[in-house]
Image 1: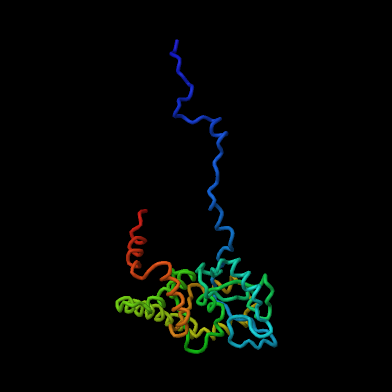
Image 2: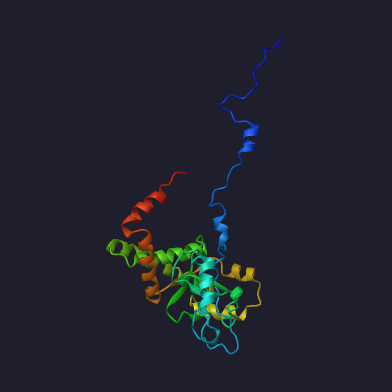
Length: 255
């Protein structure tokens, strides 16, 4: 006869009934990320051509179509001051018209965009000589926006070495406009804005395919005030002295 085995749980072993009696309690932060809208794809676009629009080169609705303070505050709460395209949290976010019609200021047609990402939506309002379209394969639009923003912040650094590295990186990014010139005949954002305005009936996927790997590089002077604001906000969260340590930790993070 086989020996009998004691199958009763020991004091240190969990039991089925014990697990049922003590259900796990979800962490309070679980699902917090669902409380604000998820980032939407960052695409090149331009303001819609609407009869009677007198807003000119304005990036936000203006004139009779000015967004009310109530709606602006509601948008800031809804997006938690974060750009709908890249997720950057900043007090300098701007109101963006989702359908690119500045005369349509219904609340459901409004979003928040960082100053840099917002200019991706306003190729026709950037002004001659203030920006270039460049070809950066392998770099997502969102990452290209973050890279340019970081470069503009580094240009304001108190360290000459960091400024020098930022200038080299900006020059490298801008130099990729030659590939756009070769393929399209121009890297002027205004020319692309005109083409986009004429092809609004095209499927969005077709436009995305045609403009794949293109990114916007903006002259530092155009975003000088915004860059100073970004730097101040960044310094409040993480001092410039800690940047090297942060870089090291990210690049050497365990897999």
